[in-house]
Image (cartoon, rainbow over all chains, first blue to last red; front, side):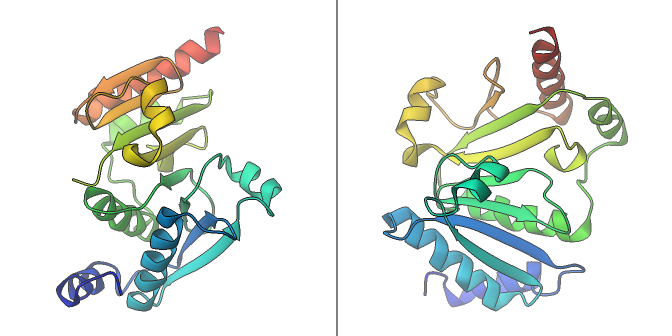
Length: 140
Length: 64
């Protein structure tokens, strides 16, 4: 078990009762790297705390076509999606701040609301070119 | 922002696990945000500044 009892309670408060089903699609590989197995264990634990949270684990090497479809080029990778994939990705173990961000992403997808300003949404709706935003972070 | 647009993908990348990307994008401190390969932001910034960078990156790729 990776999460402390206190954290488990806190997480349950945040995502224990999601308004909608959220799926975590994870890519790892058969012979798992340390970070991959840590990530998978953490996600498996998360799903035990939130009945509306589902986990789907895929093999990066054997399911290459699926990985390509999601634009996944490295592992461990997590896709947070509701009814459809909206382009939300986490690469690496979601620990520390990243863990809080992952919980936030799950809540956002479940609520179906980005929480952005109206003017921001309008500007984003006019974009017709692909943009990849990569935010580099560390756990602390 | 990725949530609002089918054109945008938003990825959080754990820097310590991908040293080659840290080197490629010159990440000296975190958070550092990279928009396509062209636009960069250091640190946490207000929503409007982040949006500007997204729009700039989109405009840059429409020119190329």
